[in-house]
Length: 441
Image (cartoon, rainbow, N blue to C red; front, top):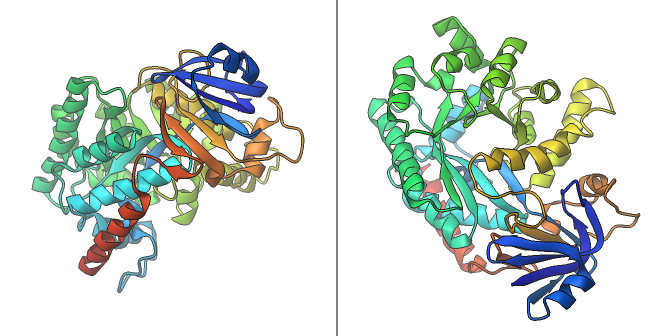
């Protein structure tokens, strides 16, 4: 049994949203009780105790769209790389990178990225992977690292026609085998989807093949209308917009992620709503790639389940929160916009999305929920209570305020020290592996 107490408890439980000096009692992988610190310490005197030192105790974060494979691109400068548009960025950087990734690169990209997630208080990660240098076994490699580090992951591999039919089929097989392995093993911290790159890199024949190989009950994880090239391709080649095409191939649905959805129209939103398809917004990536601002506020207003991700740009969900908050104010020229929608996407909707794949509640501190808990070193200079917690988080915290991270009752980091890996050794090896990759690139 473990107690995490002596802190300002932000529970995300509407029945008890805030406890001034609260405590979380953890037994096994779930929360046994939440209450006043003094009461729970008296009730469970033999339990191990983590002192929050009057700082904040919160549910751990969920990232609904990440790219572990992008880790070793940090700081790289490629020869003759001078992108003029989004397609140039894909072809010149990301496809060039993933065509050279071997299993060892995938392994250490996973170690470094997931350690970064731990340090930013993220315990559940939905990842969209590509490593066409060595496809077979790549999802299992990611899963092994996640299991070693104690994180909860949903993994998929990015199917694309860009490297030919044989490589496409390898990618489909990796997805299908990993999905079946997750279904058979029933590891409560691992789940899977069929990953698709984007509609413009997938022929009708390939979409039919993916559907024929999809294990029962699985959904898809696909980039949708991220750039106008995706829209133009769909209209010119197929006579329909992207979401309409995906609908016709039965790709939409309650277990599917439509990521980005920047260039979609009201009819496409109707299809997303009707099929209960989930959407994920990635503000920093959208701005960095200059692909446009998605109609997030309208998607939210229509009742489509939309969450928040990072698209590999960062592992800090609070950074994504901050950027999304100002992006939609700037885009609408309305300083009152996005105050409620963005935090609901991060703190409520991401948990609803995760609930479609993982048992037990996430994103909340209450009895019976999964014991995913973080402690931050944030020391408020103004009164903090249940009604203004989001304002404190938005303007006063970032991911590196997290000092302790717990996932499924296991302490992954305590007092800023990662307890599940030798961080220095991992990063030293990662530098060797990434240097070799850069030479190949």
